[in-house]
Figure (cartoon, rainbow, N blue to C red):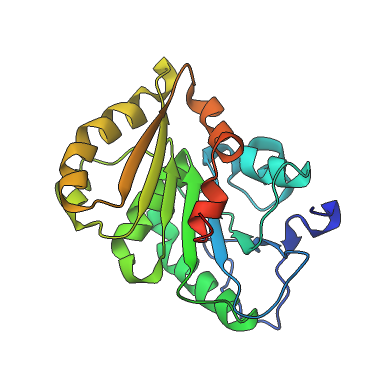
Length: 224
């Protein structure tokens, strides 16, 4: 299981890591059995966790909290970047996210064929958008309550990597629900590795329970 002291430890470095112009110092989870050639999961937070304080991620985000509470066992490295308050959407910081991934992959000798992306709410939107722009970097993606923008909808068939998306059917998750349910028929015609799970009676903030109820993390690293 995971020791609290290892949850969201600030990323150590000698100054080579990406600067703080759009992404502050990220948190990194190091697995207890850390070794070379392990997978990497990148988690993108929601809008309430913008800032320069990693404690916000644990306070506001289901996934970091579950890790801290020892509810998840993760046989992979996990990085959790944090954008500044002036960033509205993750695609505004996509270059910084990619630089961070490349830095961590080199520093921690990550298996670069098993880098996956997930996120909730604003982070779910960012998962769709960053994966679209950097398709070859990612092994699998799992957007949760991630609205697919109107700009991205026409390009939905471009997604060739495995996708496991989650939305709730509650009223507060209607934007994500409607955009995903309308896009997936077209997506699955071109991508047989794409699936959408609808969480019954789940409002927007409740869809993070997917990390507990489904083997999302095992799937992301290819251990399914």
